[in-house]
Image 1 (tube, rainbow, N blue to C red):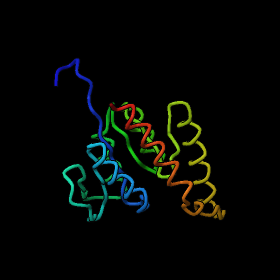
Image 2 (cartoon, rainbow, N blue to C red):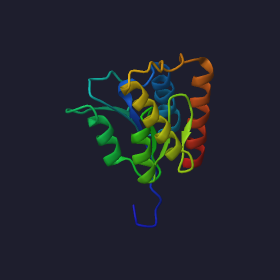
Image 3 (tube, rainbow, N blue to C red):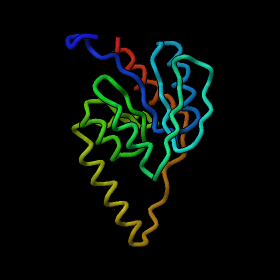
Image 4 (cartoon, helix red, strand yellow):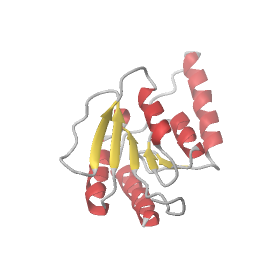
Length: 156
């Protein structure tokens, strides 16, 4: 690859909290589009026998998987994560980021999302019950699949 050749991206998955249906969508897309998909986690992960899918187990603390992804993801890559600080880091590296519900993280919305996340964390730290995320629905799967298909189309 020369300096003028665009980098063909791959998918990095913050896999510790990634829903199974999203992983299944990614596994099928990896085969169909022949795009590398790397699942990064603090634990061993089962992956299908595919030359396009691999798992990377990282050792270390709470953010070890996030750090591994942020060190590797760059322009042309897609990162799948629910972690807003990780999304911010990979956006700064030139990668794209979406969450498993198909919501895109962008330069235009990441600061607001970080602010809301930090506010909610402060509330929880003060003992306020903020509730958990909504259940994962078929519409979330579809929204994720649509965003992934859009990224794959832009990749060609």
